[in-house]
Amino acid sequence: MCTMEDNEKMAHTTTMTVRLPVEVAARLEGLARSTDRTKSFLAGKAIEEYLAAQEWQVHAIEGALQDANAHEARFVDHAYVVSKRLRS
Image 1: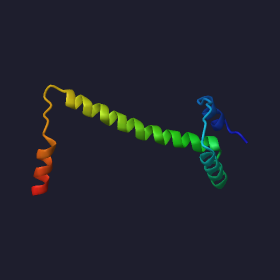
Image 2: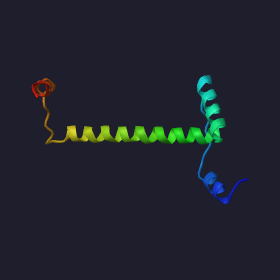
Image 3: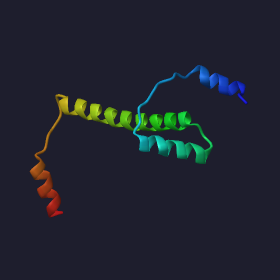
Image 4: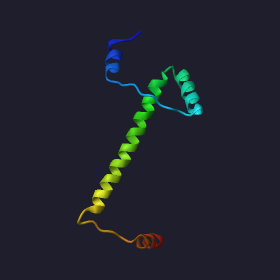
């Protein structure tokens, strides 16, 4: 039975086709059955989590590159840092 809330959520979604290895598709099917969720729901959640992790990483890298390219950036030789750490 579809509720009004379900209909609203569906209005803000799109459909896409994904090619999966047979083993991954079987695992997805098994998890969907075990959790009483749809494969679509589980795949959507997995994609959301993957995107969040990757976007965070890319954002951090872009920030580090901006810092490194800044006029006031200072660099320390790796060998110097390692030697200081080994002495501590």
